[in-house]
Length: 396
Image (cartoon, rainbow, N blue to C red):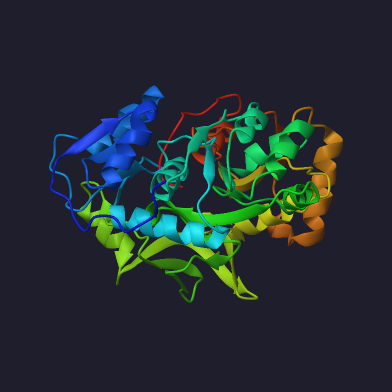
């Protein structure tokens, strides 16, 4: 069994190796050991086309790059995040130190985005295995039974919410030493239900530019530095930081300021733990008044009737209000009674100007291939009733 260690200090500029998911584990391990840099390709045609346009594989590769990973969010076109082998190795070491040591990992996320890619990296550098599971976790009991020693799993909240009501899946989840949950806020009711089922959930905050999660349960990993500006904007520093964006020195200079990543997130410290409040652009003007969409969404997530359903609060162009605040709950069989109950709950905890103009239920919220809510597509559909909107990918 191999042991974790520092990555090679440098690499020759040998170009960029484009790989599909099936070839990624071996190609990534080679890249982290000093071989050709690797760029995972999404399987979906639209995302693949966007990724190839961004990667410009015929152009010279930025020095020191081991991995170029596409951003996976829902508010714009993807960017190519340049990760060095040293940054990936630092993230792996800090993660295993926090969790209690290396172990077998189960991959149930897309491997071409950073959360899935880091599952493969942790196994490669930890000398353990990464076993694949279906995104819906239907085969998780069988996959989990094949793991040895310590075992870990990374999920997004939607996967946890859909698996928890199924007893075989809940039992399988409870057998893991840690279930990392990131990519979006974890609803309090879902966190409580997971704890009651004996599932050891670790909430994570991070992004492609920090090799994935760099703050666990509100506490930065060792070597990660978190600073908050006067307006709450988060800046991140440390060895896990990316080197820049592929072919975009202008964007790199905007994001990397004084050795820190200037994020688009707002947060505050509570009892020594970082609480992420939302994005700096979550504030919209509705009827001439500023409304914090993230605050409205937090209130919605405390509705007792939510039962683990996912939610989104967005601003939709409106001729009367300029921007109308709309709350959407992901639930089949939505009723007028549900709308009335949500409205009453929101009114009890929000000022009148912040209460959503519309409260809706949807069988499914639109999502990117990484499992995040596709807010651009959601807003497009709500702006033109009956229209699904245009699928998008990009940075969250």
